[in-house]
Amino acid sequence: MNGADIMPFDGMRPSWRNQLKDDALGRFVRSWFSAERPMRPPQDNGLHFMDGLGANLILYREGQFQVQLCLVQPNTVLPPHRHQNVESYVVHLSGEVWFKCESHGYFVPEHHIKMVASDGTSAMRGFVFYLGTEDEHSGHTEEMGASFLSIQKWREGIKPTCIARDWTGEQISDAHGFDILTSKAQK
Image 1 (cartoon, rainbow, N blue to C red):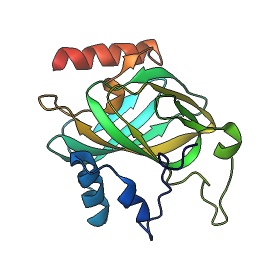
Image 2: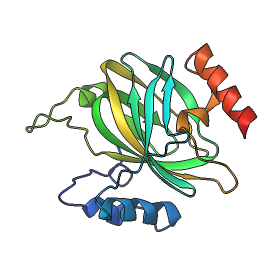
Image 3: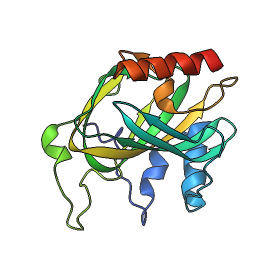
Image 4: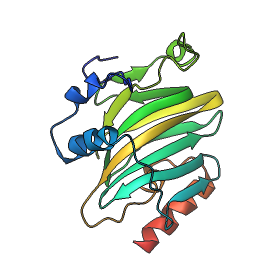
């Protein structure tokens, strides 16, 4: 793991914020956490269930920015893919997920995903990963599944939706592939 790229999150000590990029997405992340993480799920296009993947809830959306809670089913393989219209910061919350992004040198070994902190939370809780629109990444969950926040900035002219619908690469399942096609047809 590269310490400059993987930033530990601590809700009480937000020192990792200083390591965010000084761009529109970095400013949005700082602003959202500074505002004590407001919850404002949109009624329109805010809740997504995907066969073979899990559930996604948009916690907050404003213009091209949104915060999405991703709940990934146990034993799910996330094949190599990228999100061509979204740049994001991914914040691990709980569960067991192996993650790899070669362009940034991110790699979370399996023995780390099973570690438990002294307070009973995941030892990986709060680790932050940046993913640009060209960053191919992959992973898989273990028997308990995983949860994370995806804090996103969508390209201008693209209506924000679920990040799993903006997917370039091998799909998780036939149903996921159909959902991606259906989403692209609606743009």
